[in-house]
Length: 159
Image (cartoon, rainbow, N blue to C red; front, side):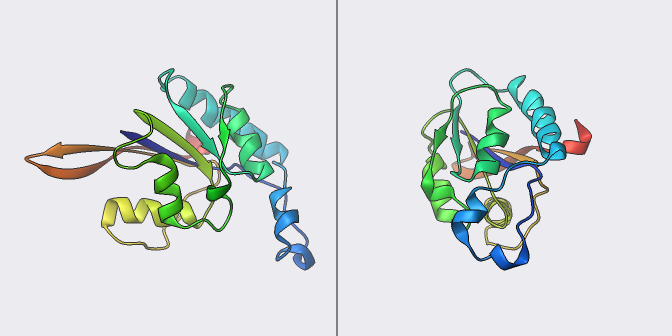
């Protein structure tokens, strides 16, 4: 299975007085820079995704706008909204057995950093995933041992 974590692109800031107001946070839009980031990474990913890939997206507007750059259908999943835990993200994808051969999840920090560290290091740690950054994992068995393979890490300024 391939699991692709794609963090939403650069989004508008909320005024400090609204930071704790969850519904407002969900309505943050991408900035002009964010749209450019999403388009670049989306193009890179489109060229590599198989037709059967499933795309799961946080209900936050900035994640929805990022996913739109893929130019394909996606499913909105409330369980991967801002503040989701690692188990919710992995369960949504069906990791490691998979809902599909490839699942793309468009979501948020700090969750994605925690998922990446769990998959690669075996425990949750506060790793950073850049805005519009993409981490591509796969799994395999070698000598009856399950292994996680990091296939790619893409930052928007590199595409």
